[in-house]
Length: 84
Length: 424
Image 1 (tube, chains in turn green, blue):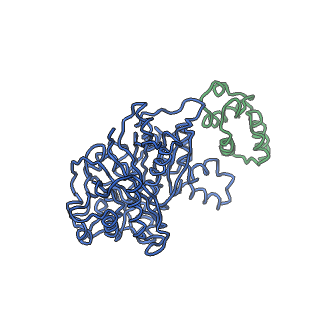
Image 2 (cartoon, each protein chain N blue to C red):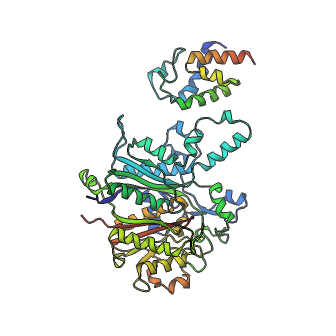
Image 3 (tube, one colour):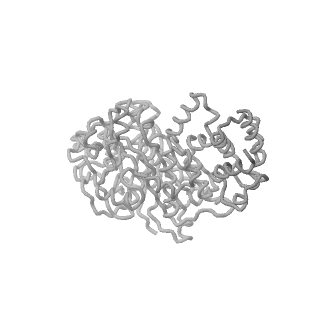
């Protein structure tokens, strides 16, 4: 799965938790969930659960901690997909 | 110098009406909110009727964001937030749009449980060894102070934010606590009230104790019968009531409408001594609570013109009336008018005191007495103590000056508050 395909699948998940903003409209690999997208840190765990469901993967605690940006998330998703 | 304390806004989510206008219409016309509940029937409850407020998803969406409503399953928070925000708006107060909390505005909003249905889902998830799929929303929805946390954040309150809990006294106690905090100058506005979860997991415990009626599953509107000779147990209910309680000075300065003044009150316990137990009241404590409330409010028993009783439609109703006659030293034709809301709503448990105080304040503000329903066959043990005409069964126009309201709860606890028509 390409980075672009993954971002397209991530966008609706992230939109659920992020307030409306320019950063959300311009979601890209550099976007930081908390700093750029203003997502409540408590919701990061919900995003991960939705990602697991969307991609059919399981994300361990260590990988979860890395998922603070879109690029880090893409990396974890690719890694878990390859392990399937 | 103590502040005078007034009520300047109200909101209500009651089985017989959501919103002040619907609720006011319902209580004036004796409209029942008690209906047969198929779920209770399916679960083989003895009592299959209950008072459940009608809150469709479109209404909930006016008070919560789509994100908040995701995996949301807490009726207590739902009802409390609607009543609380309605009260805030009714008082003409604003949502805080700045980064600075409203330091002088706080909240005391009671609850008995929170999100009991959400809690049940979480327990099943954990027991299926799927705790990692629990998500982030369980704590906020199931902590007892959830209702205060949601509401205070929506408004931006910065004074004390607390959730009180004292069984069926909770609602009346919250109003009393708000009064005390404002009287002593620790806050200028307190959003007070109480909420109760609905559904089988909150009502089941009472069904198990056999304190709810099983005789009216086919006649729900007739089921809750306070002061009736055929009262056969309470009907469970749920909902929320809310008040903006404010110093008179602050209310006048901003030109607020004033519904009524809070003169004072008292809360106590029978200590589960004497006749008092976990579930039965110690009458000495009940009478003392009423007497102390009068003292605290500096009101003579003879000045009371209306009582809003606790009166749940169990065998205890006659004892409650007896306690009122002793505490006020008034009986027969000298007894004040008395009414019971639970005939229309059922017993809304933690929220009962708040919903009934909303009804009481509406009566004071709009000069009426709502009718007692389902007591056409008054309990003779009650009419031995007070004249039947003191228990009006049709709505009456009446200018109420001083109303006393009491609530009694499990654990042998009592709360009593005295409300007065506002007189500048």
